[in-house]
Amino acid sequence: MAKIIDGKTISQQLKDELRQEVAQLKEQGKNCCLAVIQVGNDPASSVYVGNKKKACTYIGIESLSYELPEDTSEEELLALIAKLNEDKNVHGILCQLPLPKHMDEDKVIQAIDSKKDVDGFHPQNVGALVIGQEGFVSCTPAGIIELLHRSGVEIEGKHCVVIGRSNIVGKPMSLLMLRENATVTVCHSRTKNLPQICKEADILIVAIGKPQFITAEYVGEGAVVIDVGIHRDENNKLCGDVKFDEVEPFASAITPVPGGVGPMTIAMLMKNCVEAMKLYS
Ligand code: NAP
Image 1 (cartoon, rainbow, N blue to C red):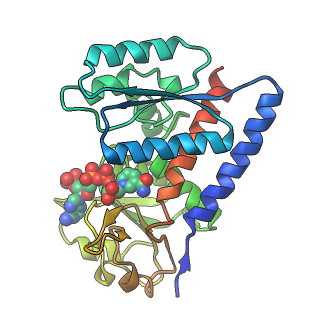
Image 2 (cartoon, protein in one colour):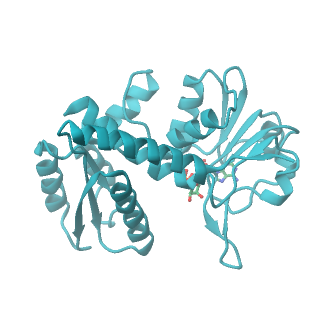
């Protein structure tokens, strides 16, 4: 039976550590502040933004909320970001994606000061990751590294297969595993012999974005399986990219959905925000 990697408990530990650190920083007169921008009212984005603000409150990070109407112009959004970049009391700026279609997401991401880019999406931070320099790392992959470390999973020298090459998950994930001295294979929609490659993984990280795609056929005996996917199944129940019940008997450790990778993402955002304040204010 596989060990269940409990993201809910681990993210709570991380949030409690941050809460303590933030309280100590407050005693020194340092207040951490995150600006959260949402354009339009996409229901999923509203849930994510709400959860981020809730985490801020729990940890003791001040959150400034900017809820802009759907028809906000790109210029108006860029002007707000410029103002927040200049504001010394703001340590992190988060612009919830996706943005409305009339906005250029790349341009908006690049407008955020890389020192306040707590999402880790700015090309400067992405570049720093590529060449092994310090910088903010995308929260979901950074959270997976934290999960592996805190669950005692050895990474060095292991063969890690990452399925997915998105800018937010797959690419930074593979770079982080490389940084941890894993031997990394990255798979994508044009990969041939996917089951065979996956079966050779010691650590299989699945960010394919297809509900319950990964079955027992893809998993070697004793592999550690990390499921990044979040979907609703036909019964409206949350599920991942991995068919948990089928894969779990073969794995040595596995993340569930919900309660695996998901809770780590917000915890890492909070960690980045505290880091931003410590490093740059
Ligand atoms: P994405 O942008 O859709 O990327 C999916 C990746 O999977 C692409 O690189 C794609 O290859 C690859 N792929 C698609 N079909 C494939 C196939 N049949 N065989 C092999 N590779 C295939 O998704 P994402 O943003 O990385 O997110 C992945 C999943 O994680 C989604 O379910 C998303 O909801 C979830 N997610 C969760 C969190 C969290 O906090 N837990 C955060 C972010 C995302 P190509 O590049 O060739 O198209």
